[in-house]
Length: 197
Image (cartoon, rainbow, N blue to C red; front, top):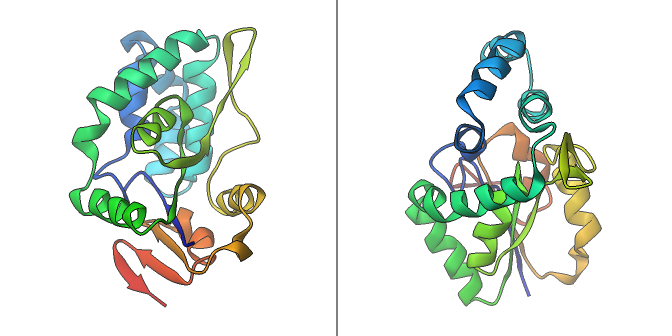
C-alpha cells in the first residue's frame, strides 16, 4: 500500500480556509477588537517578520478563548458543507480520488482547524492530522492541543500515527515552506503541483 500526504490550504484549496473560517465563525465585534489587539502581529506577518505559526496561534487565542465548543463545532460543520466545496482545486480533488482508486492511504496534514477540516475529510473518507482547539468544560481555551500542526510538527504527528516503513511509496503534496519537512518524508514530492527531487 502507498501513502499520500496532502497539505490543505493552498494545495487542495485555492485559498486560505483558516482566515475564511475566522470570518465565518467570529462576530464582527470580535473581529474588530481582535484586529486591533493583534495589529502588531498582523503587520509583522504581512512584512514577513512574524511566522504563520505565530499568527495562527495568536488569532485562535484572541478569537476563540471562551467560545462555546459545541457552537463552534456546528459552525465548522456548516463551513465544511457550504464554503469549503467552492475552495477546492479541481486538480487536487482528481488526484485525491486517483489515490483512493489505487487503494492508497490518503491523509490531509494541515495547520487548519479540526472543527471544519475533520468534517470535510470525513465526507471523502480521508484521514486527517490538523490543529485541534483545547476544550475545558465545553468552553474553548483558545489554545491548540499539542501546539500548532505546522512545519516539523507535521512530520512528528505523521510518524506518531503511521509506520512509514509499511508503505511502498510515499507521496507528499505541499505549497509553502510549512510543508518542506513533510515533503522530505516522501519518495514522490510535489511542490505547487510540480514534482520535485
